[in-house]
Length: 293
Image (cartoon, rainbow, N blue to C red; front, side):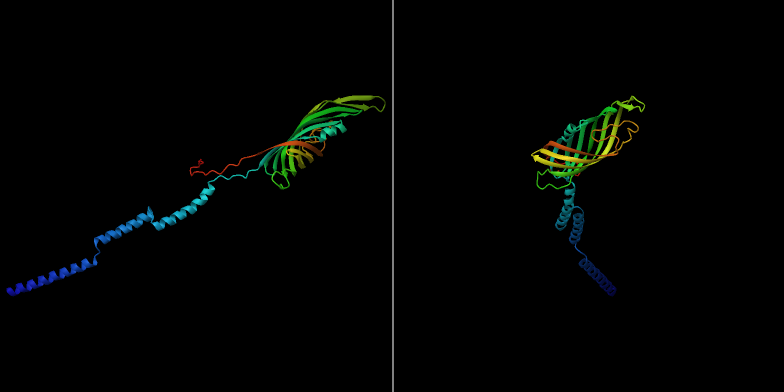
């Protein structure tokens, strides 16, 4: 009996020794809880940093990237500013036609010219006038009168030599319209068998339209005092409005009323007003689209 108990005690001792040795091995191979927690914190921190709060090394890269992307955005969000240039409004009077009326009393015309430089070498042009003519032949007598308006553009062909150089040669185009009336026309027809026959044609109102190309010169004699000329070729859009009737011998602003083309010349003297338009500094635009003041 004692021998059986002794064997049992030896077996139990071996079993407990083996169990303790296995537990010791498991304890040595296992990581401490604190280390595991540190690793977990580290992983959590990395995820957190990469997602929400970047690490210092990542922050600098992120800021550089943000700056490089933000720079062009600032440029595009600024309003473009046109380069300022001196503005000029010029008024000139034609003196060639009043002088011509002295030589040819059968025609008269008074014209005014205005231009404004909407760009450095581009000018908006408006011309207006009034005139007429009369025929006082032995066998034909009548008068006519009309007002006219021309509007178009001129362009300077040369770059200014220095600031304030306003001398220029221009080319331009115009649309013209004339509104007027040819009065009663009285004519006398000689009779081959003796005597004469007198008759008349009723007055006629008319509207004439044309297009013209102009070449001109502008020369500043004294500060703001100008002289210059325009030579024109004109193309009549309505040459047949007097077909079969007596046409005006002179249509102010165009020429002979029933001709398809005509040439003209004006000589001007005038005065100009000038001012400098202030440039606006670019204003940054907020992301919402409102301008920051």
